[in-house]
Length: 566
Ligand code: NAD
Image (cartoon, rainbow, N blue to C red; front, side):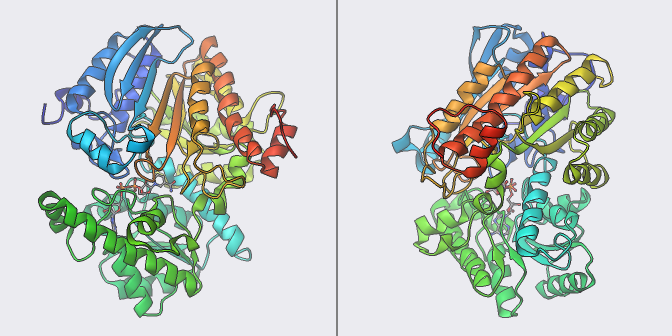
C-alpha cells in the first residue's frame, strides 16, 4: 500500500483503557507502544512511518505495519514474534518467560556497514533505519529526552559555572528543533539559562512553541542576540528559536563578536542526505534538490556541515564551552571534508555522562498503558516515596509535572542507578513497586518500563557513548550484543538490536528492552532480573575498561567481575 494504513488512520495513536485486543498484556503492550510511536502527537512524520531522528521508522512499510498488528493480535503467551527491520518475518513457540517480540533493525555485516549499502538495500525494500527507540517502539516524543538533556546541561553548569545557580545568566546556542533536539530550549530554561536555537524548518519551530518547549521565535539574528543578552543580564530564563541555517547563524554571531557561554548542536547531521539541510535554500527548495539531484544535495550538505563545525571550533577558540550532542557532526566533517581538528571539542558522553554510566546509571522511561495521566502521577509519587533523599530527582519530578506536556500515552523518564540495596537495584526497586501498585489497582492498567538505547551498558558507538574509552575499546561491539542476549536470558518482553542510531549507519550498535508490569508474580520475577542484569552490564562494561567509579560500584553493590584488575 502507498498511503497510510486504514488501521493507523482508525487508531490515531495508541488504544487506551483496560480492554485489550490481544491474547495478553505483553502482546497488547507491544501493539500499544507501536501505535504510540506513530501517534501524530508523538512522531515527527507518521504518514511516512517516520518517528524521529532523520528517518528513524517504526515499521518498514504500511503493509508490514498491518501485518505486525495482526500477528500481535493472535500471538500466544508462549510465542515469540520476530521482526527484521520493521517487517514481521517469523513466529515460534518459545516459553512464557521468554520475550514476546524480538527485533533486529538496520544491521549490516561489517564490510558493508555504511549508508551507501544501506540505501541500496532500502530502495529494494530489504531493510529499514530504526534509529534507536523508533524501530524498537519505545519512543515517547520529546519528553523522552528532556531529562537527559536537563541532566547533561546541569552537569555542564556544575563543571563550567560552579558559582552560578545552574545556567542562570548564561547563553547556550545550539541548533535543531526536531524530535530530540526540540528538548534543548526547555532543558536550558529548566536550568534557568537562556537559549538560542537555529532551525531551518518553521513548522518544527511552531511545534516546539505550541508544546511549550520553546518560548519565542524570530528570523532576525540581531533580535535574537539582543533578547538573549537582556534576559541573561536579568538572570531570567528565555528560549528563542532562530529561523535560519545553523552554519549561517554561527557565522553571523562571529561577525558580530557575539560569543555564547555554551555552544552545541542537534541537527540530524548523522544523515547528510535526509537529516541535515544545506545553507542557501529554503526547506522546500532543499527538499526539491534532494529529489532532483541527491549527489549534489549531499555535497552541499557536507559543505554546510564543514562551515557549521568551523563555527563551533571558532566559538570554542574565543572562549565558549563547546561539545557535540551525539549527532556525529565531528565525524562527518573529519571523514568527508578532512577537517582534522573536528574532534577538538568533546562529545557529551565523555564530558558529562560517563561517570553516571560507570555506576550503571542511565535513563529509563515508563508508560501508562491505560492512557490515564493519574497513573503517571501515582508513579511520580512512588518515585519520591522510594527515594526520599534524592533531591535532584525530586526537583526533576516537580519540574516535569509543571513544565513537560504529555505526548501520546502518559509517560515519565528518570535516571536511576545500580546502587544495590538489600540485593535490589534502584531500577528494580522502582519497577517492583509499580508492579505492586498495578496489582493493588492503584494504577488502572499495566505499565511498560523501557529505556533509550543510550544507556550504561547497551551501546558501542565510538563517536558518542563509547568515545575515548579509557582502555581504547570504543569500537568493540561485543558489549551490546551480550546486553541483548542477557536481556533475553533475563526475560524482558521485547528485546531489540539496532545499528546506526544517533550517529548513522555503521557507527554504532545498540539495544533496548521492555518489561510489562501487569501486577503478576511473573512480571515481578522478570522485573527483578532484567533491572539487575541490564544496568549491571553498565557496571561490568566500565569496570572492564578500568574506570575506578565502576570498580567501586562493583565492590559496593556486589557485582561479580571475573579477572578484575585494580
Ligand atoms: P530530527 O531529524 O527530528 O530533527 C533535526 C532537525 O534539525 C530538523 O528539525 C531539521 O529541520 C533541523 N536541521 C537540519 N539541518 C539544519 C541546519 N543546517 N540548520 C538548522 N536546522 C537544521 O532529529 P532529532 O530526533 O531531533 O535528533 C537530532 C540529532 O540528535 C540526530 O543526529 C540524532 O541522532 C541525535 N540524537 C541525539 C541524542 C542525544 O541524547 N543527544 C539522542 C538521540 C538522537
